[in-house]
Image 1 (cartoon, rainbow, N blue to C red):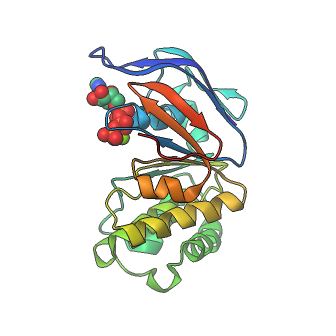
Image 2 (tube, protein in one colour):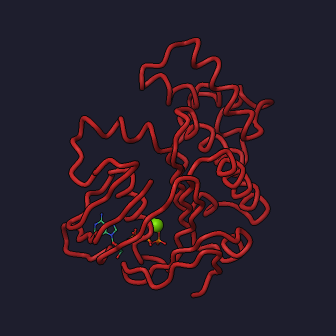
Length: 226
Ligand SMILES: Nc1ncnc2c1ncn2[C@@H]1O[C@H](COP(=O)(O)OP(=O)(O)OP(=O)(O)O)[C@@H](O)[C@H]1O
Ligand SMILES: [Mg+2]
């Protein structure tokens, strides 16, 4: 499903953010990527969604080599990958329904499909009763759940979540992770970037640990080792 072959990334200022990364993630896996600040976690997340290109090596997503993906193909890739990043990026002047609907409108979905799918994904994240609220009328945990709902509208095969619990207290953080685990049970591959020890240790699934842009451990049912 996701394959990194000898992937390295040098940012334009020559910062080495990924060094010879080799790993595969199978369909339906739940993988946590951990490591200290600046070790290249977000860089991996961005390369999976083609927001950054590797400097060397190949990245293959679902059999598709996206290493030198054309700009015009990026939307096709992004429809297969739900993206949940820490800065919520909800539209402040749209309510919750409209925020989620917007993700479908921009890709040209029909109104009847939007009216069917948006309530479905808002139900999955438990926000059915708050669909007409605006982002500033929600808690941080609720806002993050809207972001997850929005990431689900295209029924992605993969969800990439970069520090989705970063701004949340531990109860809300566990709720968000439980939601990701639930989505994973439906068959969606989940890549969770985090440096929250408690969360990683409670998930009891595969953990890839980075240091200095390199993988220093890859455990099947891992613990946070740093
Ligand atoms: N656009 C950029 N240009 C230059 N250097 C960058 C850029 N983005 C990230 N870096 C550098 O690349 C390295 C890896 O950054 P990255 O954001 O992947 O780390 P991270 O593991 O996600 O850290 P954090 O836990 O703080 O989010 C760091 O040294 C960072 O300063
Ligand atoms: Mg990061």
